[in-house]
Structures are given as C-alpha cells and as structure tokens.
Image (cartoon, rainbow, N blue to C red; front, side, top):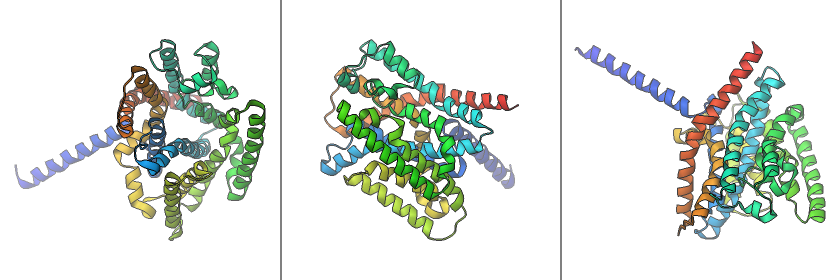
Amino acid sequence: MDKDSFIHGCNRARLKLSEREHMTAAFFSRRYGETDFITGLRAIAATMVIIIHTGAFADFGAIGQTITGAGKYGVNMFFVISGFTIAKTFTDARDYPSYLIRRLARILPLYWVIISVAFLLIQGQIIYTPIWMAKFGSAPDLYNFAMHISMLSFLDYRVANSILGVEWSIPIEVFCYILMPALIVFCRSIKTTVIAVLLVYILTAILALISKKTLGTSLPVKWTPIAYGQLFFIGMLSYHLRSKYEGYVGVKPALWIYCALILFGGSLLFKFGGRGDTIGLATAIIIIFLTTERAGILVQVLTFKPVLFLGSISYSVYLIHYIVILFFQKSGFIFERSYFYFLVIYGLTITISSLTYLLIEKPSNAFGRNLVERSNN
C-alpha cells in the first residue's frame, strides 16, 4: 500500500468514527443547534434540585448550606426555560393543536408512569412516606392518584406535592402550556412583560395573604401557576429578545452575560429576598445573549457532551431522584457525609433516568412528532 492510499484510508476511518460519534451523541442527547446550551442549563437546574434534597454541601459551613439551600431555585430555571420553549414551539408550529400535542407528548407519558410507580411503591411501603404526605395527612388513595393523573393536583395543596416531592411543578407546566400561547403577544417587548410580571406579583401577594389568613399557610398559592407566571413571561420574552439581538455586534451582549453570571453566582452564595427570581432573570439573560462569539468558554461548558446528556435526561432526573431518596430512607442507609450521599443519589438517579429517557421519553416525543406530521398531511 502506498503512502497516499494509507493516508486516504486513515481519513476515511476517522470520518466513519466521527459519524458514529455524532450518531451516538444525537441518539442520547437532544440537539437544538445554536441553542444547545439551553440543554446544559437544564442539567444545572436538575442538579440544583438534587443538591437541596440531599443536603449536598451542608457539611461545608455556612457557605455550603447557603449554596445547598439555593438548590430549590433550579425549578425557577426550568420555568424560564419552559417559557422560552413555549414561545419557540408555538411560533414554529403550524397551529395551536400541533403545538399542544408536541408539548403534552413531551411531558405527560413519563409523568404518568413515574407517578404510578411511586404511588404503588408508597402503597406497598417499599419507599418511605413522602414528607408532604405525612405533613398534611394525605394518603396514597384513589383521590390523590386521580388528582395527579388529571393534572389538577394544584387545586388541593394537601396532595399537590405528596407523592414525588417535586411534582407540584408539573401541573403548573401543563397549565402554562395550555394558556401561555394566548399571552405571547404581551411578551414581545420589555415594557409589556414588566407590566405582566408586576400584575402577577401583586395578584400572588394578595392571594398568598388571603390564604395565610384563612388556612394558615401560603402553599395553596405557592403550588399554583399564578405564583410562577412571571418566570414564564420572562422566558417568553427571552425568545423574542434573542431573535432581536441575534446579529447584534458589540461588547454590550458580552457584558450582559457577565452580569448574568454575577447575579447567578451571587444568588448561590448569599441569602437575600428574591433569590429565586434573580436566578430566573440571570437564566433569561443568558438565553437572550449567549453565543459562541460572545462567550465561547461558557458555551463549551454548557455543550460539553456529558452535560448535554444530563440536560437531555433532566426531566427524568427531576422526577425520579426523590423516589431514590425515599428508598434509601426506608432502607435505613446512613451516610456520614452529605456530599457522599449526594453523589450516590445522583449516580443512581442518572442510571435509572438514562433508561426512562430511552424507553419512555424518546418514544413519546417521537409519537408526538409523528402524530403532528400525520395530522398535517
């Protein structure tokens, strides 16, 4: 074999290897082109939620405890990203039914499966009784199950978060999927979005006050769509502003990204009122301005293949991790260090979530796409 043939053969081998790597990455990860980094943000959000539920850094003094406590605001990131996704998916869809089918096929099948499995595990006393179920004296009965399956659990705070410990957010997502497209017109400018956000804040404050006076708790409002509408509004605005500033040249976009990172980091390290909304705002700013040209290193981090994979399975991770926690609690496993507990829960959750992603999420997403395509033909 001559030198040229050898070189040509090596190039062909490298090309085939590259194609296989690309196909493998595409099979295991969701890809969205220039907004792949948003999948990386999902990975961060899911990790934050596991951090708070495992007390990951609680052994590292006051700063570690503050960072751990900020983990609950991963949900705020998810809501902002969902607002962006609602605006993008609805804009790209042929009509409202096509949009809604895609969204519901994305979120409902896995949710129904995980809720059903957790429900049976609780009934069989295989996992520990969830804290909110014990707190409000609710039970894994037909009423509780029906409220969850129908996505109406947010109407009764006693069952809204009683099975998975995180499921309160899913009916909120579905509610916003249904309603928000009618409100997209109000989120095409900063002015109208600010007005909408202020109205949400005012209404939430009034309802929370009434709830606390009458029921002794603000949870009946906290676990409903009204309390997080501002994050969806901001997320939808980020979609329109990203299109507006996509070709903008100058240093300002990069400065906005650095400001967002400062806001995000400060919200993790320091306790102050409005940390959750600050993290949501930082997420929106990153979505609006982040490109490879403006902050290449950040894009590389958020689109690193393991991060993309984790972001792709983040929905499964979000739903499943608390079941794993309840199983360990029931089994009586004790970990001397909180960060080791976090690593064990994290690793097992990723393993199980990889399977549910391949066996449930990907097929249900494909079913939604095929259903829309057939209806459009």
